[in-house]
Length: 123
Image (cartoon, rainbow, N blue to C red; front, side, top):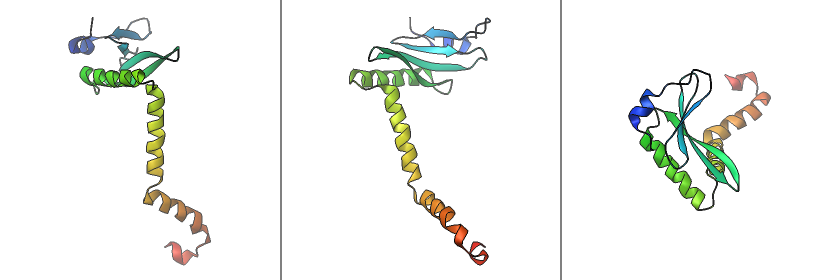
């Protein structure tokens, strides 16, 4: 049975110190940690290997948003892509894009060249 928003709001952590998992559907569940934090997760299989994908933190990521992310990940799986590997690739590309900004290159050049400058140049 799919989760409801009220069930997500009222869910409390287990008293035995283990994470509680409230399943939604299609592999998605809400994981409630012993400290009370709530995380959306997707459990899936890729190349006969079981994996988990983080979809967000509740309540910042609503039930509706988590389901949209789940559907996107399932579409990628249907196309033969691993959603977690795709996310890692996007993260690397984003870091590379920010590393190639004019500011980053200028700061790198300044650090490399400034040790040769006279005190007059540094002020």
